[in-house]
Image (cartoon, rainbow, N blue to C red; front, side):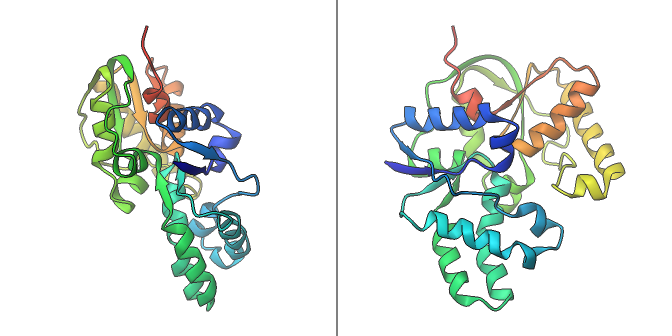
Length: 243
C-alpha cells in the first residue's frame, strides 16, 4: 500500500527517532512510504492560540502539498491529525468554502499511526518484543478528540513480554496542551507533577504514549525528579524485536 508520511514538527526537529521508527514500522507492515518534502507545520500552535486567520495560508500550503496524490496520510501524533481535521471548519468560518471542500478531502485521508495500523491495515500484532512493566498515557487529542482509545492499547497488549499497569486517574491530561503549558505554566506544572506521581507509584520501567508532545512534557518532569523510567513512543516500542 502506498502511504504518505507526515512527520510533524516535533518529530522532525526534536524526536527524529520517532519519525524513523514510524516509517520503519509501516514499511515492515508492507507500506511503501512517500515523503512529500513541501509539507510543513499543521498550524496547531497558532490555531490553539487564537490566530487561526493568520494560519490560513500555511494550512492552504499543507492541503496543496497532499493533493498531489490520493494516498492515505499517516502521522505519529494525534494532536496534529486532529488539528488538520478541523481545517474545513476554519475555512468555512472565514468564508472560504472552496478551500473547506479541498481541506476535507485531505483531512479525511489523515490517520494517527495506531488507527492506521489497526483499522486500515487490519494488524493488531506486529511481532514486537519488549520485556518489562509499562504505563500507557492516553493523550487528550488521541483519545478524546479523535476517539482513538483501544487501538494503541491493543497493539501494546500484543507486545511479547510487556505488562501494562493501570494508574490512578490514567485518563487525565498531562498538562501540556500546546500553548496552555506556556500561558498557564503554573497550572500545567501542577498537572504534570500529579501525573508523574501516579506513574511513579506504579513503579514501571517504561512510560509509553502515542503523542510526542505529551511524552516530552511528562518525560521532562520524570527527568527533573530523577525517576528511572524510560519514555518511549509507541512506534519505538513496536519496532523492538527483543534479544
